[in-house]
Length: 172
Image (cartoon, rainbow, N blue to C red):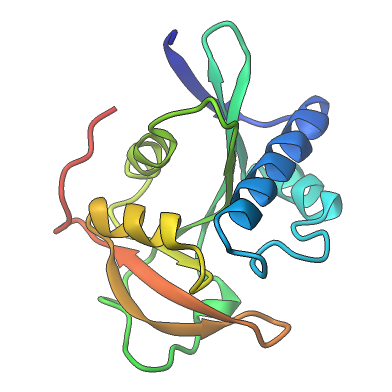
């Protein structure tokens, strides 16, 4: 595979981003995670808002072929204000990774996303559905600590994880 680039998404990327999200949704369904991105979530309006705020990114080949998308934003995230069954590793400023989706052809996406996030912060939070076994395994692989359960605005539970500067080094 050619080299990859992570760049901020633009409004012109919306169709590619929504296609990647649909591929991610299908992969989750195929793996038995039928609840996480059900009912059209994440909606295009949410992605457009991410783009407008400068929080949406694309991982592309150096030829510009989209391989993955994700949102990366500075906290605080309101859904992380309360955590049950545990606690955050610290109360320091953090960034949050949301809405990671990739092409079926893409490999090493999570490693690249984390490496990119670590260029912005040494304190990353992320959440996932309990049925998302693939994401849970990747978070463990890359040194994220399970911290407890958070609740989305609609009341849905998510498993919450955090990586701090004491976590393993991840190289591009």
